[in-house]
Length: 523
Image (tube, rainbow, N blue to C red):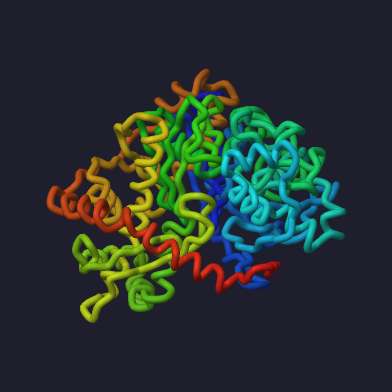
């Protein structure tokens, strides 16, 4: 590439798809954002979206951003990063056979044969049978085979959303190994499909190896833009399509946090804390680290599934005043929610929130629920909003400490990125609650920038990820904790938040039994 070269990256998230042009210094040279409609729920707990519509939205964003440059031939490479755990079964022509099942989907399947034989014995000895049964119940391949068997028989390839988009761009069933974050038979340590002897093939008895795409490492060429994709998207035909990684992995790279002494906090629909490591180290037993956007790294991650989605939930259920005022003043509702946050002091007027509106796998477990405790006649809307944010951040702090324990070292620096990090008030709250300095990434679209770094290395403009990261990322604003607020939060975290989950867990189990009596199959 030359100094005037451009990189096009697409970041397809839960709420919007962003197409961004970067130069080789990591500076935006054009951007477009297209909203993604809310997922459909044909049944309670389902979350589906039409795959063809998602492709059209991606193409619309690409056409918009390309229209901002009069020299599209300057674009030397493209990469696509997407939300994780969103799956698309396709036929031999690559056409989606049904709507995509997206990551918030809560359907599950019971009655799948348990893992037996030697693998079953080994899992029992490891105390992992319950985890594997949950894995089986959540796997979309099992659900499709049981509930839509005729469709499953027609499934030529079972793709993640990234693989579906890469096929639409190149005509090839190829995807990045760093995008395989789902209930699929993937070996996270070897970063390839699992060996035939792995328990995962027994746990997912209907999926075959030939139904899965070819995997390449981040930075490798997947293919080139086909004539049909060029006509649909406006991207010039023949441009290399480079493998990136999942959105959260790209965020870590784009924030400049791919060394082990950094922790990257991501304030997106799902909120996460990630720490990159050159060693394979499980975050918890049977919870693997995910492949990083740097192919020589793994990311240890703890996630709050409905993290900053809770801001939208609050806005919908309690924030009508802010939404109406924002419309009349032509400002964002989130900026008005920042003002609401300032109307409550640290500790949220005695409220404490457990932010698990959706369950987890191990910590939190599948029984997890959301909770707000401490309500009194004095409680205000502002207290509820602050309590939700504090709950998300307490959970992320706990996750950071768990990762530190697994790695045997303290994190030296905290970086924050994602849509929620646009708010100074939220980032200051984070610094106060963590009791640490927080640096906001200079480029808030860190996921797209991380994918651009993959392209820059993949096309040979930078010879290493260290060089590319040094040239294309830079720190942003530094936030320091307020001593008084931080002292309050340390006590609240230690004495109230940390013991809360264990005390509520029996209640969560009771509610789970009432929702799903023994033998019930939720389809």
